[in-house]
Image (spheres, rainbow, N blue to C red):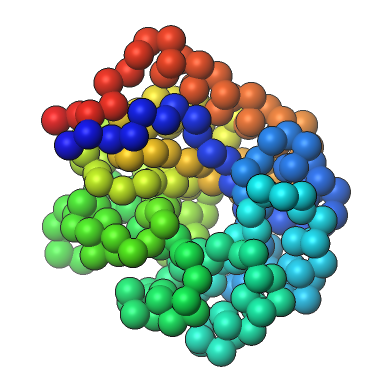
Length: 237
């Protein structure tokens, strides 16, 4: 299997709630910013608020709307308010439910912390999952914890399959201190890689730190430089 040679890791800063945090993400060079549409989340904002924040984005920075088992009417209404948004499905949505809005989407895969499912002890099959959701623009990898979202936890990146025929987004417990290692481990396993951070660049839940965002972006670029320097093999067996 031959994968894309691109070594540029795209960056999403998620869980934004304030204008200054949107501006900090854009200034640092983020490719996307995420708004949480899931009411139980401490980072939840209304679609009206998300539309206000998304209006600050310049061209080529993508707003992403994160949903968890939301009704189709809510998703379609949000898309009408933010027509440039990419959708992120983070619950138990089927492929058909992901497709209902008729918009590009990412599908979250909840990766067990110990590489086992919560029940039955069988290994999570990411290759099959990616095939089942091949209509998705990317598969987002997050830690499987109680509830929805990664809870700031990292899973064992080394246990991921050596070859996944999909664009992947690495998430779950990423910080400026560990994102370089995460990219180096996961990038050779997929077509292209992006990273998604929320709690790792926060002062408190929903409140971001511009300094941490800058440090995170710098660490991502350092990983890209290492990959390019060492000519990492991008067609794993």
